[in-house]
Length: 493
Ligand code: HEM
Image (cartoon, rainbow, N blue to C red; front, top):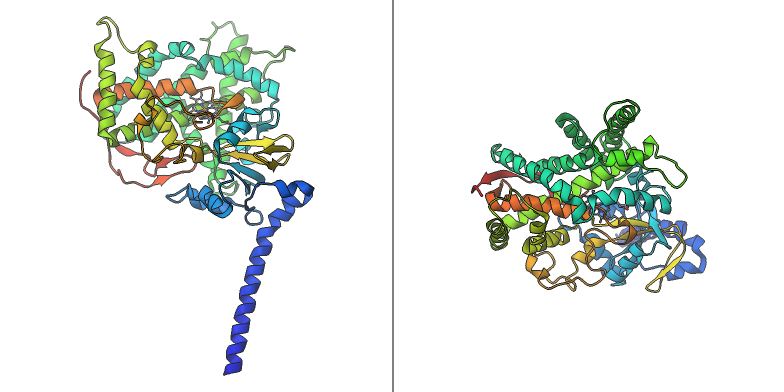
């Protein structure tokens, strides 16, 4: 009997030791694969762990972002490896350095000599290799960015869209108030999509727009999913959606090119016409693929984000009656002080919305729509004493900065008054990124959100059907029910 017990105990210890050894072996595979060729440099890599063979740290990333605590992903690095602010990992199939502190994030975003876009190849396949995040040169990016950003940047340039945005916001709010139950996020996506379509393509028919917007929603769900190209998976569906989008845009480009060779009167000057017109210094024009990839990228970036942030700002306002009242009073004062002959909002009035702009800034911070952006090191680079090897990806983790209690006390709390007299220190507030890749649509987004909230606050309220509904964090933070609820008209201002 004693012998039997000893044998079982021995077996147990051997199995346990074997499992520990196997785990160590498996956890070391990626280090050998990606670090052994770095020579001495591997000793100055940031701390971290490269996860499991093939999948790297994706399992823990997805587990955290599909739970109710996405921040547990970064916290697990901090608790295991200390507050170094830079951690090595294997993310989206690439050896990567995750950067979570202000100074280092700012450096990565603003240093074009050492860093270029480094989005996962799965994302590139969805957004397009000729888009800004693809393989275009630094100079080409600069040129196309200048061309496309000018019409959507700066309040003066935007003044021509105020009337269109206003008209659509008013019509939609009234329509929703008569609809009863709506998926608020879905409706807002449609609204912001119509606006960006107007700017880029002077609008298409309502059916084309709805079809396009649906494809975009599917495309987006694949952006941060595992890149599994098999039926049933989000990434597979997203690739199909891209194909449909490209086909629709190709038809639109063909029609525009045809129209230009015809004697038909020239169309209104929208962004599409600007893209068709543009020539580089050698007289080269953009080909169809380039135009289509720019459209896929801009129309996606230009409506998902504004739709989500408008929804969250409305929800936060409803959840905080004192903030709602203060924001409403500001909007009422704007209407009261305007000359009786004036019809509708002016840009000057939008600029006077001091409290509302704090509501928007705070929403952008709490939600952090783009919780991470991707870069690639063009050469070995040293940051805070650590080496980022050439070719490694850098994940700039904005979410961690916006939710750092040392920078924003009580960070989960929605508190617009925290912005009273506060100018964020460099590197601590990145809702639109920074440097040469900073969002070109930031002014347009803020304008859309402000116009929506102006009319909402004056005349409406929103009642959620499932206020306690759980949240999804991928690809972006949203309620699982897409914010099911009811818009109610409460006054006639
Ligand atoms: C609340 C709304 C928005 C948020 C939070 C947001 C956020 C961002 C962020 C963080 C970046 C930087 C990405 C990086 O560093 O790699 C970015 C880039 C970009 N955004 Fe936005 N964005 C918003 C609205 C818009 C709108 C309305 C447009 C279209 C007019 C737009 C078009 C773009 C484009 C084209 C880029 C790529 C820029 C480049 O690579 O040069 N965004 N956005």
